[in-house]
Amino acid sequence: MEFIADFHIHSKYSRATSREMDIQHIAEWAKLKGIKLMGTGDFTHHLWLEELRRNLEDAANGLYKYHDVYFVLSSEISSIYSKKGRTYRIHNVILAPSFKTVDKINEVLSRHGNLASDGRPILGMDAEDLARIVFDIDENCIFIPGHIWTPWFSLFGSMSGFDKIEDCFGKQTDKIFALETGLSSDPAMNWRLSALDKFSLVSNSDSHSASKIGREANVFDCELDYQTIREVLKTKDKKRFLYTIEFFPEEGKYHFDGHRLCGVRYSPKETREHQNKCPKCGRSLTVGVMNRVEQLADRPEGFVPPEAIPYKNMIPFEEIVAEAKGLGKATQGVEKEYYACLAKFGTEFEILLKAPKEALLKNLPARIAEGVLRVRAGKVSIKAGYDGEYGIISIFGDEGKQDKNEQQLSLF
Image (cartoon, helix red, strand yellow):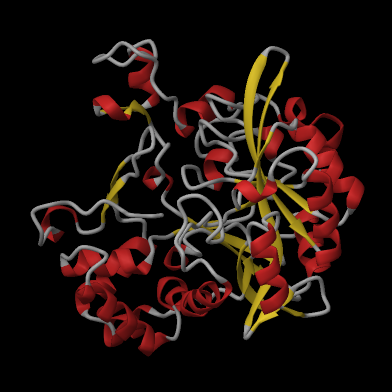
């Protein structure tokens, strides 16, 4: 069966996360979006784990259910540690096939830090050691380096990471078969590194609020079964891993280089021209994802590996409605229109991905239908994000501005 999966989210027990990030609201929004499989997030937090046990029904296939939505036990771990005289900050996402496995992981990790401090705990543990512990407990776990290009907290981060995956995970590298691209990069950027060819590139929302789940996601055509999904990712099976749903990477808040406090936003070329220094304060710029990819790339832009999994760039439907109506995203007018449109098509992804052009034009307000079609065709303009500031996107350009102020995407 074909289904959409979002493996990486956070619960209400994570820092800067909505109080509505509970199972009920996550499941409600998953159904609105058209997502069949969600990660639980935060299984290391004892209170959230209690809620998961209480609310989820064992589906007897390594997955769990809440009403009609399936869940896989997942959590993100932040490792901050020193190695060979340098400090590294690496985020990793773990998927586990059972509560029994989760209990064993939590028991060991609790010796290395306070798991109750946050839904995404910070441990002073080498990422290689974390991977070894997880795989020693259960070799069926799926270990995914998270948002691998984010400057401050990732595998290849310009401010915090490594140049090679083997330098990070050592002997555990061969057991890792999936990498998360993150909001500020898309698969095409990752295809420029031949060293990543063997990995499945997955995309997830990393959402901190229920309405934002699925802003990036994965589309499969296989059994809804943990071991099957694991095998599909491990073998990078193009017949069963159909494509990923991606942000336009320029929207991500670390796509370009810059210095937010000074309002400086640079392309990699401009950064080189300024010797990586902010022209206003003289401090070092935060080197973004595009620049970092260029530093490590051994292929030209536009190269497509023969076994690459396809992808589709999308914008959340709520954002399309907001720009089409010339309203702020968090307004009653946008909310009312959003639900009215979903009532005609069933789910958000049905509108964004599947509904024929004729059906969109017939059943949606003309300007909203045109917005969806423009996004499908990639006809958008984006002012790239940098140093923690999200990019600003425009579907209609100057002729589409019904409000004198551009709306900036509010994604968390």
